[in-house]
Length: 255
Length: 225
Image (cartoon, rainbow over all chains, first blue to last red; front, side, top):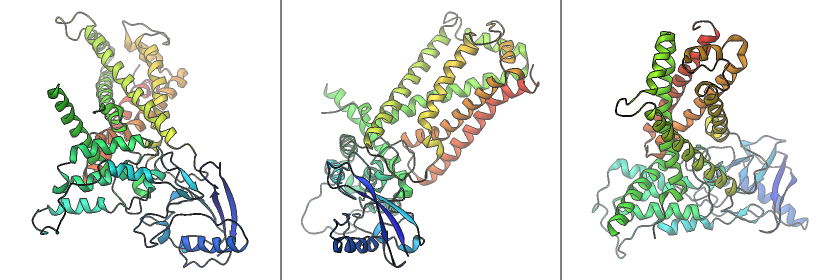
């Protein structure tokens, strides 16, 4: 396969950046998208040019590092698939492919396709945890969990924190990411003690990081490589309402 | 330290949902009132005059109407304030736009909420000047609203009917996403419920559009005259 790539090149955070065209020839349809970029980079290095910087780690679809918007869609055209698991057979010979970084104020570009996703860490640090006694592992059946809750929690826990939801959202909102963690921990008995403070603090950290607000536009779930359901955002909203009501009652009694 | 919930993006969304539902309830009553036109001029005019005397004798003439107008105005202002704040925030959240814009995966109704809302606001201003104050109505006789409506949608004033149709369809699109979004914001949280909420929003929007459009088209086709 012969392809034309138009890739966002940006030397650093201060650089304005631009789309640059590259020709890649003899691409095997069995290559992954990242292997195709590796081939391009090897050639660029041999030619003495700066290779295209992009994030990658596990290359098996579970780490969430490979962040790029391919033809306007985060992780490319194949549903429920990360960029590293996307194969070139999805494209046709002669295609022009546009590759851009995640676009969000909260995810500043470090170089080319690499963005700083530290804002997600700030959201998690604000409440995406449980307080548990450490030591030896507890007996697995000590705390029963209803099967339906366990399934829904596990579905939400599949989030790999890649940021595709932010990249896809017309508002640049990270509500699906935040809601996935709220849902995951809120459905578990271990998550109950911090349930109210978690939702208030995580939403505050989300807004503080400069993400936009959710308007239920529904662009995030189709872009999510793990298919985190939109319903998680409903759970976040419900927890937020309940926690706000309780907190306003507390401040009223505390005077 | 507790920040007021309204300062957060989720809090603003809750304000939009609550004010939106208030406005939708008004739209339902307004539509039912409009349909009185099919029972003749006397029935329609009687209904219009009754609106001025709701609450009598406890409330003096037109007091109820002004209370209702005040509540609706607050709802509209709250809705617009939250929408504007969220829209500005969304704009700031993506300072560099995509060179290649992907196709819409959600609904077009969701993508047109903001400009659709602006169209609806402009329509409401025109609508009040037309059929409430009568300034832009060819007759503008407050005592006989039936005559005002019939004159408004006369066949030679087809452009008025066209604008009404566009505005009502905009309301339909706005509600198709808005109702679903409001339910989700107020805590609808299951996948099964999501399908029901979407179906309800679509059905509600279609029925409301049909109800509102039946009046101008009945006048246009001579069914009411």
